Length: 148
Image (cartoon, rainbow, N blue to C red):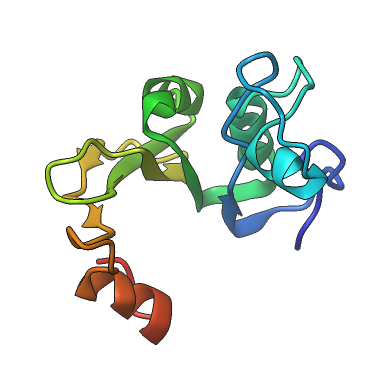
């Protein structure tokens, strides 16, 4: 199902919710002149932030179902706070651009109504020093391998 998270039909429950919210919140960026890119990377609705996405995921995922979200690494604390006690078993997966470079993105997985502890995944290095994808990244992108 692909829909605007705010307009999605209430009452529907899923085993897994995956979301890729806009990375930039209203007032925190200059929008791209390309309308599609502007919508994908940010928004100008001050009432729409990552907490709204977590709240919507909570409403639409079944008990013991899972949420997976990709976002900016600097939003990790806000996302984890939004998950609160409603989700547990939180796994944070840093996506390192290259070895020795701080993660710009994270994948956060969580289980609704779980009391399991959180843990930090070793992460995935995306690129070699020359800019080519690492073998692990190639396996995921080209050969449909799972992120371990």
